[in-house]
Image (cartoon, rainbow, N blue to C red; front, top):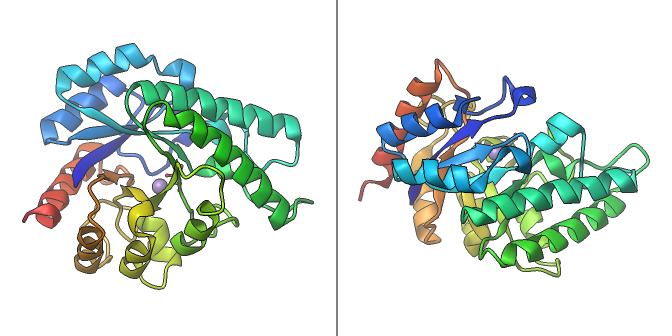
Length: 271
Ligand code: LER
Ligand code: MN
């Protein structure tokens, strides 16, 4: 398994669970110094992410890009893949598609988290899932040319009412026309929603393509009460070889949260 740490470049996301903020150059320098394999970037949009510049910066630090978030489409532009307005849905697909291209150039998958939206306000669950499935299928086909998946992230009940657990999301993904949509399993959301985090990871098996590495209180692993031993055993059982990416609050400060994450990562991946 490989380590990653999040860097948010989205002003509207302030207060969110990202370790480093606002400055990609400084975030990469910290990540490299602390020994991370990669960074996960949340850009304001594809135009704010010059793939050639970012590749140069990552290369200078010996870092990879683990994934690129699309949440700025929601927090910055109120775009959602399940919005009742067809024009908004179309712009949402465009916004994500452009991030898939930028991320793909860096060899990284894009994440559908808050851009999935929710059902309600005149939109039935069935209709919302239809729109979501269509959008994910189309976007995932666009990611194939970069040989990366599209990551779909089930969120807890306070953030979406579409899919809150991995099992139900996995069943939905298996009905899509593209097999290139895979699961992003966020341990914080799973702690709220799953009967057992370890059992859910085992059941999702090969669909697990990325993990957000966060404790029960969304702080760095080791600073909450999540029992990591069965979770790491389950990830080993399914031969998970992807990233454990710290999407945690920058508490008590960014560098301390990153350092604690790295200590936990080393502890739990030591053979
Ligand atoms: C939001 O709670 C989250 O976990 C993000 O990864 C979604 O974009
Ligand atoms: Mn997450």
